[in-house]
Length: 356
Image 1: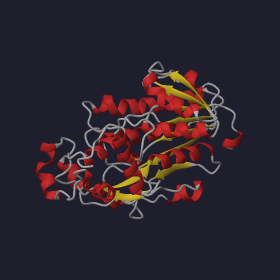
Image 2: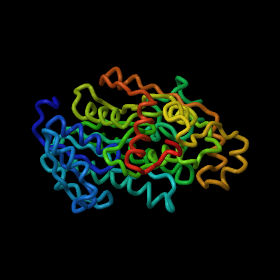
Image 3: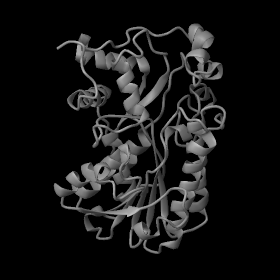
Image 4: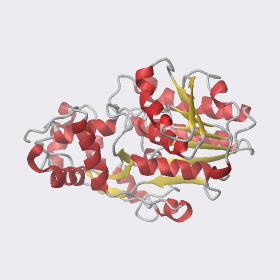
């Protein structure tokens, strides 16, 4: 499928989301007609950032009301579409009810969208925004890999509704996607599996765990120190480019780890401190693992002793060569992503430096 010759519309679910916004931007820049599925098309305040992009692009955008948990609600939005980008899924960690707030929307939403693809004869390809969380649950899982690093062959088997519930939701959703895809032979499924996504949002006031992390690194919340937890980092704009390649590159097949850097909380803090200096109270120390194990559960209910044992002090290494080799993906420097994200918060006055 050649994007230059594509005249059919394309669907993006959860179009106002952090990653989805940049996906929509790239599609519009390519001159495509984007069917943007959102919960409430009447919310002009939520749509104005996409409208601004559309006004400056050769493509066009149409909004459709859709609900992840409502079967059939994507029918109008998907009509006549050749490619479906299913990005809609909650990215929140602190929830009251993991089953209701994370697992049901992720699993049932994926089922509803892909079953609609089965009913829509024009669909040729479906791209699902999964996560590296569907590849691993804890950093300790790396010890069980065949190569000592995470690859697309790995699946998260250590998460549950009671431990790393977000990761569990992404795993169930992606497995459901492959189950539905394997049950038909008309459209091709490709999954994009990003690590922690950083970088500026189309909407400078977006809410996401990524924005929360950068804000807390700068506002003093984590001044006393951060846990030494290894993780992957990727720029949101690179994730959008991977979606574009997954949707239109003839070579795109299977899963793609989308991660530019094997990093950690201390490395992100260091990148910000190197650029902004003493303008913010960035953490300069790591909190010892023994101390986190002792007091973590009392400070943050997510910092369970199981989490500390299986993640703190352990590196995270993934093999991102498949996307580079097959789809020509390149990655921005980690510092660029973190710095531009924080600078956007400063420019929007969501965060103010301590010193001029």
